[in-house]
Image (cartoon, rainbow, N blue to C red):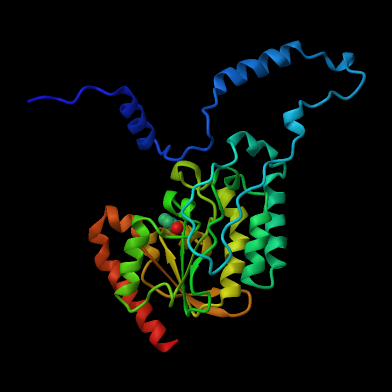
Length: 299
Ligand code: URA
């Protein structure tokens, strides 16, 4: 038997993929070890405070405004598949608001949106969530905002980040099948996420990131005004239903959800990504979808 010749580059790429590094953030690699060594050397050479008589001039690069971010396609525009390089992670340092202030700013900004289009524009301009700096673009929503049912997932993955649309990867394909099983498709459902920017490497969003993004998704739900809200997975259910209960206990029962304008019915079910890993859960998810279908019949 012959074995393929070892290829260290392929192995390094495979290692990165397994570690969740699946998107290039910049055109060229950045040697962060060399950067920190240079920073440390600069700090050692810097004059002591007593020696400073005038404010130090910032390096030119630090004074330059952040490069403009890619704008997500307006509603109704064709799907975007081009992947623009994202702002390098160093730009995260530009976010200066302390966490609690960012939550307050998000709340105020979201409250100011009178329509979904306005909300989207406000979120495009929001700088209080560091995830925006590493994501390629905002993933706002897909489907029909006038639909009776709204599905809300956790956060975009790689395909969603590239296309600017929620649930377009493997879990999205399963979600489409789950919806089709009860006669729904993206013209008859509205789809969004609690977190609208992809966490790097698909890591779990931090509680802080969820807290900052929560005012936006709750306003989005209020403005879309569905009759039925379906939380996909534990993190979505816990964030939207303000509970710490696990998805296994939470799923399958309708709970009241206050949109701010009225009370609607919310139900949690397993996340399609979980169902891909744990197909035995599909039996219960099927039950939940039937409950959604029945509720829509009566809505
Ligand atoms: N998982 C989510 O929670 N949302 C998406 O949009 C895609 C995968």
